[in-house]
Structures are given as structure tokens and as C-alpha cells.
Length: 496
Image (cartoon, rainbow, N blue to C red; front, side, top):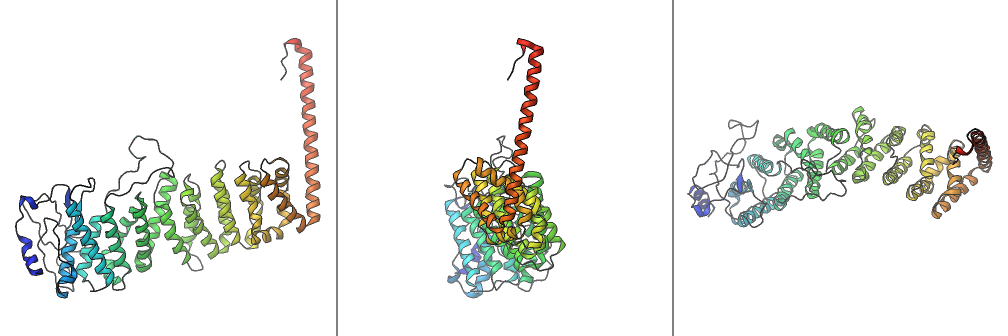
């Protein structure tokens, strides 16, 4: 039966069998030469993959399959002999190289379903491990993947439309209309990479630097489903293909630099940071200089963009991983956070305080002492914030036992810095919950060191008295000036 189908591949198709101009095939695998037909509107490109020519040695015999000019159903793998399955695999890849128009759901419904079923069978064939595919099949499969996934991404809504750029959090993501097929192509690639039957030495011929670079570029897709698959695939590639590791790190670096210093627009920052989180987890000590530079030049500046809230959870995880790996980086990280600390964005301040707590949990006393003064000056400003969530989040730092231990050990430096802020909260803050939390912190300091607490209280009272004297003197000077002006100007003097 299968031989009849193969022989029938060269028969002429009637006009009713031809596919309209909305169907395109690119780089069809298994085709030895371009076919011509007056009734076919399929555009076929048979250019071979760069770096591989017809003379290259191949351990498996290369049979030339007849070109396909229409999407026609093929038999199931289970319905053909084992010896014919490799050729059937190639024929199904040919079908999957036709790219169909998804702008109209009512168009080419039959062809779309045939391609979907072919992709499902290919995924099952790879996943089941029912037969180890030949090197040629691997090459043609990667060609099919390239045809389907590497494409021009549509511009974001703020690009070249004349519309005002919206907040990235408020934008509706663009969902890829061809996802029913694209998902299966990604699934096939993922199953191929994770399969124990996949020989890395063979696979890296086709999953090369160019392929990986283009794969990373696809993280700019607005479709979150696509980015999720890309994240899993790139992570597996990083783990399985050691030759690609420096390239992947460098490419991610470049995306971050472009995002921070040029566009501040990229859909896949969160997913890339997730991949980096697991990469950083595998770093060994002593840390390479390359990794330290990445922390200083990319990760810490990623706190600057306005859209940091979208990816902050993943960013915070990466930063904390660095500190847990090498505690000597704690001072550098804390000072970096202080450098990019938001001035007027209260929601960002809450995020920064949460990250700061995680960093401090991994910070030993020696590193903590290096940044006490600038750190607690900033915390004092947060304590007095009119936004109760900022003030509350800063006060929650005293609920962490490790941080309380650090503060207790360095209380003689810390309490004089924040005592005034705590007293101002008690006297002037509008939120009752803040009053209660502040009172608890003051009580904690009193129990730590009553003598120091009394000293700070006396110093604060003296400072208030001096401020009151200065205010009285200022009012007295203004009164004298007003009286002198009244004597000279008489009734024409206007007082405020």
C-alpha cells in the first residue's frame, strides 16, 4: 500500500486538487529537485541548509522522494512496515513544511487538519521512541522546524502605529493565530532535544549557533504560550549542548542591554530571567569574572526600567542566587539597589523592600557592616513614607529574625539613624496600623539596649528643642521686618 502511495506521488493533480495562493511551502525535505506544474500555486524553495551539500558523507542512504504539491493525508506509522517508517517520516515532514494562512479560519480547513494530524504523529513517533530516526531524518526535521517557527514577528501595538505607548502591564498580548500548528512544532523540537535517543554530536550539526541565536530572538514574541515553550527548549539546549552555553549567555546579555539602555520594551525578559535563575544556580566558586560583570552590568540595572514589576520576581531570584553563591557580592548588590531605588513609584518601592529582605537574609555580618549607613538612611525614608504600604513593608523587616540579629549586633550605628523616623511615625503618621508597628519596633530597641534608647531619646528631644528655638527666632526676625516695613510704607504695606 505504501509503495503505491510513493509511486503515485508523481501523478499530475487536477485543478480541483491544487492549493490556492494562501498556502506556501518552503524548503521541502526529501525533494531532490524543484517541480513545476501549471495547476499549482505553491511556492517551493529547495535550497539546502548552509554548510551541507550533496557531496557530504551520510551514514544513511539518501533516497530522493518525489516533491509534494498538495497537502494530502498519509497512512499512520502503525499501518506501514517498520522498514518503511523512515520514508514515511520524511513524507510527513514534507506535509508539515507547507505553511498555511491562518488569517481566515474558514480557509483551507481540510489542509490545516491534515497538517495538524501529521505533526501529532511525528510528536508521538519521537516521544514513543518506537524507532531511532536516521541522521537524514533529523536534518530534515530541523529544516521543517526552521520553516515553521522562524518568521517575522508582528510589530507590537506601540510600534509604527502612531498610537501612544501604553503601560506594558495594560497591553493585551498578541496571540499567534497559527498556534494550533506552531505548538506541535515546538513540542516536536522539545521531544527531540530531551529524547535519550538523540545523539548530541549529530544534533549539534543542525542545532547550531545560527539556530540557537534565532531561537533566542523569538523571545520577543508577544504570545506567552510561545515564550513558555521557548523557555523550556532553550533551557534544555543549555543543559545538553555545552558548546552553545557561552553563546546563549552572551545573546541574553545583549537582549538585556538593548532593553535597559535603548527600547525598554521586550516581552520575554521574565522568561529569560527564569532560564538564568537555573543557570546561576549551577555556577561554581570561585565565580568567573564574566558572571560578576553580568550581575553588575545587566541584572542590577534591570531594576531601573519602569516595567520592572512585570519581571521582578524572576529578577529578584537571580540576584539572591548570586548572593547565596558568594556572600561577598552582598554589599555590591545592596548598593546597586540603593542606586536605582525609586523616588516616586510606591509600588516599585514595595518590590525593592521585598527583594532587600531576601538579600539581607543571605548577608553575613561583615558584609552588612559595609553598607549600614546608606542602607538605613533609605529605610528611614521608607519608614516616613506617606504611602502606608511602603512604610508597612519597611517595618516588616523587623519580623525577620536574621535581620533583627544583624540590627541588634549593629544597633549603636542603626538606632541613631532611624530613631527620628520612628518618632515621627508615632507623632504624625496618618495610618493607625503604622503607629502600632512602629511602637513594636521602638519596644524592640528598648529591650535590646535601654541605655542607648535613652540616649537617642534625649538627643531627639534636644534636636526638637533646637528646632523650636530656630523657628521662634525665624518668626521673630520676620515680625521685625514686617514692623519695619509697616513704619516705612504705612497703609500701602500688604502683610500676609
